[in-house]
Length: 313
Image (cartoon, rainbow, N blue to C red; front, side, top):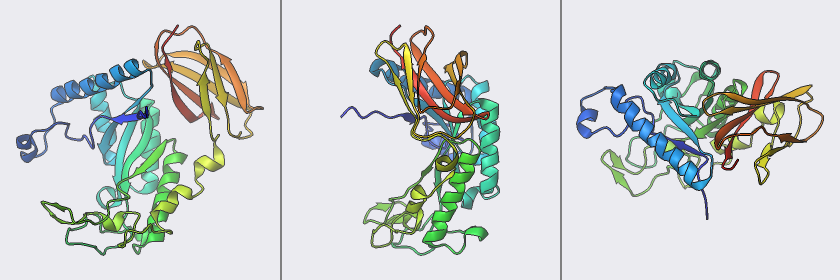
């Protein structure tokens, strides 16, 4: 069906690295940047090769657990030669990362975005709706935040709405909930029979969707639907010389700045458009084959980013 990913994450919560042997894992915390850079760059190159072979643009994500840990890790990734990535992803769980409030997560996102000129996402988060269990497997999330207590479906939803707003208000591009469908089952792990997360899923213990729980977060009005352009679509004409932008709505601002950067960060085009229409056609400069980053800015705030793949000159 020609379904291809728009993003590929190299590893998961890679605070220690990737492809660790059992012996290294059992030995405790260790980090080998020479090994790290070689493995990550090999994974990144595989994605870039796939992009070229299939004429698609794919964003690469680096994922670090814990908001307060991200800056140090990204700084060291770059210092050790891992530079070809598009999105900084982080995990945020109140139970484990509670020293950073939801508001502080937003501040960290804004600071990282400014420092590294990368998109930011919370690519893993979760919040329970009950302390009860539906099997003999211990649940990994079982604590509440005072502002979102007691644990119940509406407070699970509100926690996600507030986190989403904090992310978007500070320039982040999204949030992924993990794992909304991990309900109990007859399956077993070495730690027990059932699931370790049914109390933080979006389903009750009869496996029915909880209509007033976390799932409603995706239907709530957030910053993006109130304050920024929506339903933006980009189209390149057949010879890749004309870029068409279709805007779903406007923000009544005076101007819209359109920038195009190479993957190395070089600005190759900048145009300021008067924002009195919903569609634009822009003549592109002569571009070499490759992947480019398109960004739209209103009032010095990036409201949209996309990748353009140029495969002919």
